[in-house]
Amino acid sequence: MLFAEAIDVAIIGKGLMIGLGFIGPAIGIGLIGASYMQAVGRNPEASKFLGQAMIFVSFVELFGLLAFASIFIVN
Amino acid sequence: MNLVSLFAAESSGPIVHVAPGGVLEIGGITITNSILYGWFTSILLITLFIWVARVITVKPKGGVVQFVEIAVNFITNLVESAFDNVKIGRKYLPFFVTIFFIIVLNNWLGLMPFVGNGFTSGENPLLRPFTGDLNATLAMGVCTMIFVYAVSIKESGGLVPYFKHFFAGSPKNPIYLVSALLEMFTDLTRVLSLSLRLFLNVAIGEIIIGVFAYLGSSIAPLTALPFVMFEIFVGALQAYIFTILATMYLAIAVNHSGDHNDEDDLTADVPAETIELTAGSAHGRA
Image 1 (cartoon, each protein chain N blue to C red):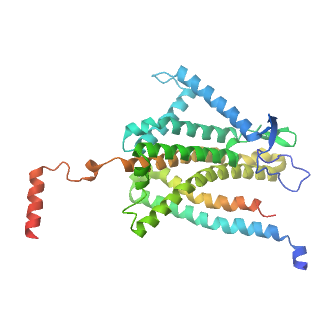
Image 2 (tube, chains in turn green, brown):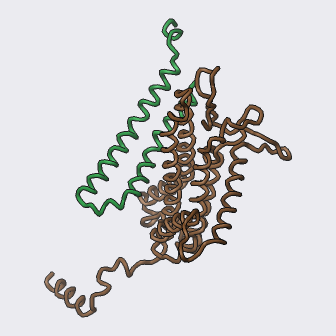
Image 3 (cartoon, helix red, strand yellow):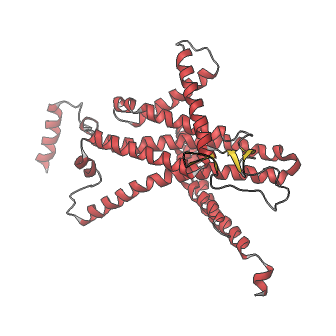
């Protein structure tokens, strides 16, 4: 009881939601960027695939945004 | 700045409007602020394109016309290269160019400073970015996917050949049946993924701009500026991604239906005698 009165649990929940929800997409975008740079390093002609890399970034990013959007559900 | 009040002095944080608010009523139907701004953008887009079509010349003159031409060219090349048959790509090109320009114009005009709490009608802001409303992006996604389904059914020549594409083999084989059903389900989730991606990118960008404008208090334009610049980039990127994904969904269905035996056959340009000779000798040895 004391604990619940002293700390707003919803805020902790929101913080955890954003923090944990962003870990996955951050790793994913990092991997996409790393693979893209590796491909360009091996074969500089592969730099024309930046647009396709961006498409995959947007696929991954959607899950982070879903995590961000769900903090508005928590009260 | 936009979805969030800039001068939220009394409250403990920035005011966030995730849902659109009604601003006026016509015949019992509530007109929300986002559809109002969407109409404004559509009229602007139609006017711009009619004007560009009138003044465009073969020899480039520069100015706004040049930018429109570059963007149209970019999408044209994108769509045409996605299809095996350039003729089919060119036939459905206007839809993709239109959807690209609608999204990019709505994203960029949504960043204008007068959008949001600048003008209010009652307690709701008068204007709101059209793509920052889930109803709008859902409508776009549904329209796009209905178009894609209709065209793929038409191009593959009827419902039965269209559904045949989902099956890798005979439907009596349970593995092919299950994989085809999964494929169909994935197809249906495309509406949601298209619309949610656009809505969340735009709406959350607006919220982030608002949060940083709130944190900056008296120097709000300075703290929000980097995020506004980022949102300009994201707005163009999301329009590109929406367009290319719609193109891909159509191209996958349409390209599958055409027979490309000529391309798949690696021995197409080898003389018949050579094939007979090599194949015959291989068979003979075996």
